Image (cartoon, rainbow, N blue to C red):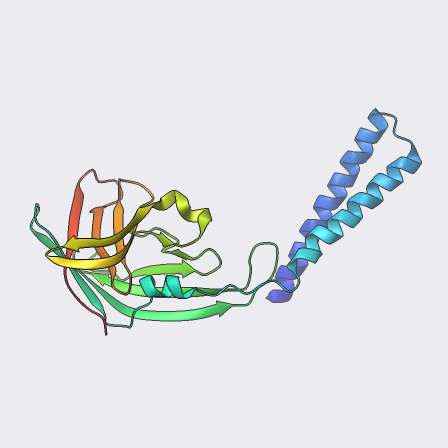
Length: 226
């Protein structure tokens, strides 16, 4: 399988290179570039292609989750969080059913060696009959890379700061004070998530479905970290 993929990649690169050389030749003829200069241009293109295709993909740096990221997102299986919306008078109990950490050792044009965190959650309010899978990627330190509701976004990388709203030293929710609060907005629908260090999400504003205009304001009322 790996050999087949590698061969297909080389065929694709060779095809693109041949097409580009042919196009450059046509441009050279159009603008009366001498044959000697044309050879130099083609040689430079080939050299650049070799360097750009192969050079950067050797000895790729490994990406692992930082301790700061783990403090907000790594929890043991069977940990749970119970939320309540006082307006609609509904609960949402989130339970972490399974968690695996794997390392993808791949260094090529489309990927880098990185840790992947896969967590499987059960929600009493969202998708009751389904297990919700949440993926996090260490190379960009992004929690919930597919933006699954109701789990929000969390990241410590600047490339994802479009989701970042701000930071609070403390926040009181249901008469309890939480510390080290990072606030993120979701991918759409005016979602907002408040994350407390070593606790998880303590407040969330989410729709029931992706195309819904109704927003639920859930506050944490109880949790247990196994």
